[in-house]
Length: 137
Image (cartoon, helix red, strand yellow):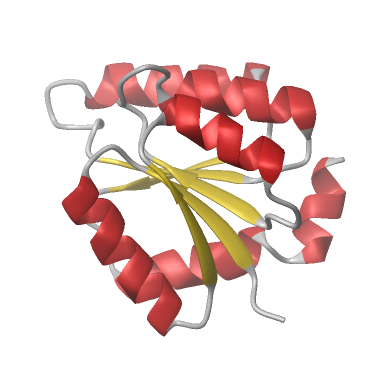
């Protein structure tokens, strides 16, 4: 049975590209356009193995969405893919990410744009490994 991933991103071009790549790699994909919709979809869908999300989105940003998802399932791994960590805000971004990871959940992970597809798939496989998820519980 393929792993089910929830992809949440407000940029339709990036989201569609990511969905196509991940479906080609054999994953089952569910999509949402922003953090608010991501939470709604998460509540309705069953058997989600990983949430992949942008950080900066309208209505609810990725961090707000992650907190609500972790209120529902504290072991759900979330992978943020974002260009938010640009050169001018890299230190600030890393500090914010570390604070969130330490205070919110060890299930949060980050991948900076641009990235390699092999890097993404490797991270997905690591985060959806039952041993990884059990270690966070």
